[in-house]
Length: 156
Image (cartoon, rainbow, N blue to C red; front, side, top):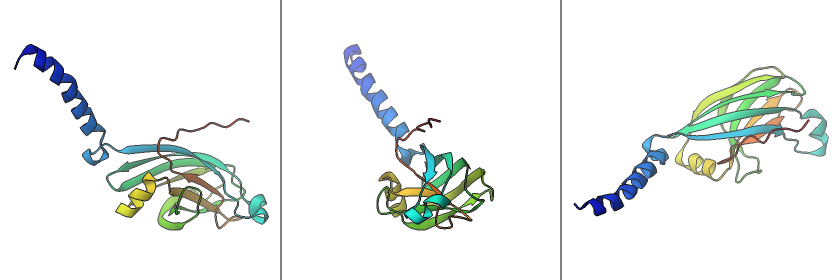
């Protein structure tokens, strides 16, 4: 092969190798970051929902691993779940349980094996984390897992 041909094929080889190494199917986990926000479902529940927090999540194959912190809940947390809605912002059913500190501030974590349908929902931003507390047993704070989302920061 001539020197000129080798020089032209080198960028192509680098691009192919980078493409393979960035493909989740080849073992590189997808990572997500986001924030928890209050999630009142009706005006009557507005006073009972409060709290903030952040999370990171990673999808390695079909396993989604979540680590987060929360604070300022109106009452102690009782449960945390991974849920799947029809689309971002649309509440949905539980697809997995998470471990949560039963306090007004603490941590949430867990690993859940997702079905192919659930992985597709994650990629279309339809999966979220919800933390319930004693005053808001149907959800105090939630965080949608959004592709490419960075923590937004809070103005105080």
